[in-house]
Image 1 (cartoon, helix red, strand yellow):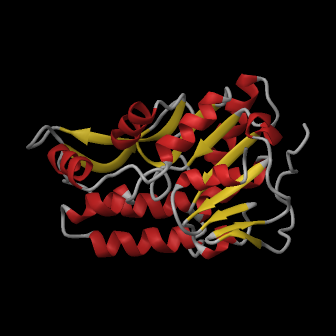
Image 2 (cartoon, rainbow, N blue to C red):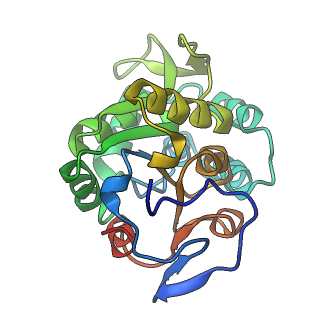
Image 3 (tube, one colour):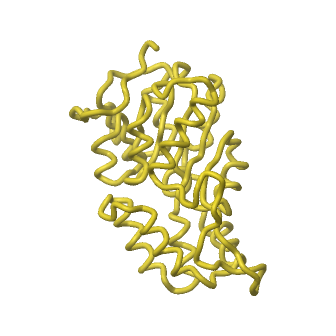
Amino acid sequence: MAGIIPAMTQAPAATEFAPGLMVRGFTPPLKLSDFKLIAFDMDSTLINIECIDEIADAVGKKAEVAAITEAAMRGEITDFKDSLRLRLALLSGVTIADMEQVYTERLRINPGAAELIQACKAVGMKVLLVSGGFTFFSERVRDTLGIDFMRANILEIESGPNCGQLTGRLVEQAWGDICDGAEKRRTVLEVASLLGIEPAQCIAMGDGANDLPMMHAVGLSVAYHAKPAVRAQANVAINEGGLDRLLEVLR
């Protein structure tokens, strides 16, 4: 495929293509229509918050949970599953009403998300949301943005006040219980296989360490307002502006 670069191996030096927009390993522009699938992380990528941190705020544990989230996203906690289980346990007793309040009052789609997805769909690409977050939020983000495929974690809910409450655990799904970095990578490759395309024809965009496995597996990796370890390995780093800045290097 002309213009598509190999999956990330060693990261060459980055260059500033435009203010707040870094590229490495290729010379822009690439052709958007050479790609057939774009995969997005959700929390802090497609949306403005880390949902688990905001849910924890409902039970007065945001600082404690956010510290674990930040360490995991920086790559300082290498087992994402353990870090998620630890944070989930702190959410026991959070009500569905609390989560609804997070969605309505705090969650916003990040700038440029709709424009980037529209441009991708206009050239025939499919869109995947693959998240270590929760279906309570990802299903709504999927429907809002017209996303084709989605994988995320299901929060276990028990009877309780205000439409039920969280148990602090997840519901096991056919593919497993926790969508971590390895599952993100596997999902991207699975969807690519279903579409009959090569990994080199895929784009993956994220901000945290658990996005690196899928970013390493595809043809173009994009870091969005990301942690330093992620910016240092991505083909494109959007450090300022919206998600649609990717279109400055993909025409």
